[in-house]
Length: 148
Image (cartoon, rainbow, N blue to C red; front, side, top):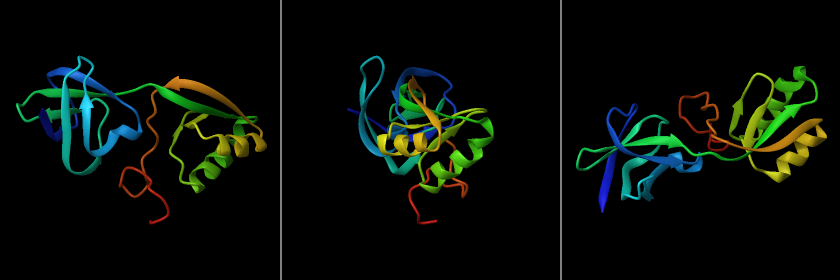
């Protein structure tokens, strides 16, 4: 089985591609399979954010383009658009990954938080799309709890 030991920020000449969920775009070591069925081992020195549009570099030099997989998410729309900052604060205060749009937010499916957001007069819809939440404010990529 081939091994991918490095990552590039931009794919140049990919021979295949892999669609990864938000969770699977932050890995160090994982057996993976490409769109065309090629199996390989991701084996990086440390867990990193795998960049959408980037490439995993196999030991034979071939590139596998990294694509975002569509996944089930909650679309959170406040009753009043001026409540979007308040809703964003509540989500951020709980360290939930969140993608912010002009008049709504997307978060991963979480029924406990959906109930909280409904109590704040938000409309919750299940959608199927890619998820690229904002990165952490301290340049570390993912927000991983309260150790900041």
